[in-house]
Image (cartoon, rainbow, N blue to C red; front, side, top):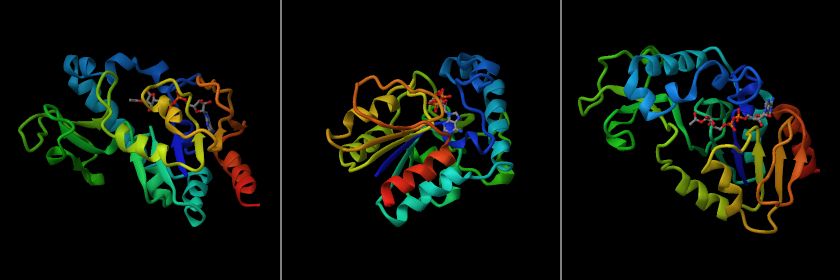
Length: 229
Ligand code: OAD
């Protein structure tokens, strides 16, 4: 089973989504805080933005939806492919999580962000990154986040899992951002696809999808009943 998740997965934990009313991109211009150009123009603003998001991690907990996704591992071999940069899937117990857009708890080199030698997991006492903190190559430490316009290295393993899926589940993503939104196209024909979201999410491919129009927790309850009874 492959589970593709987005910001709506963490909404019930108190983390804002991006494009709903009151979402993050209404409060913070995306081009300032989530593009390489924004970072070049004002690194402190961007570093502080992610410091705030990182600090929030200590105050939020996985919700029932995350817990039920983790519980799926009792019945299926599950790969979670998430666009989220929080660590709530891992904290709920999911053992195989691919982060397409990076991870808040990690930092990397500003010069070579995808070089594994420079990607570093922060301990909670290091969560506040400052201007002047440097990676092992001497460059400013930057958030390990995939910004708009940057390559998405984890898309390759995600595609491979999608091609082998027997069940595909989508939770809490508006499917606006590529390449993540295109993953459904790699799921073989005939494989059942479920979508949990309280709002209507248009599916570009016209593929048959079993929609559960509910929030993540309630929707996961319903899905567990459908799959296991
Ligand atoms: P969006 O904010 O675009 O979409 C959030 C989705 O969650 C919407 O479809 C909502 O209807 C749904 N939703 C809201 N509350 C929910 C709940 N309680 N349970 C389930 N679903 C709920 O967020 P994403 O699709 O994740 O990238 O956005 C994709 C990417 O765009 C993000 O990873 C981020 C952003 O720019 C980067 O920062 C690189």
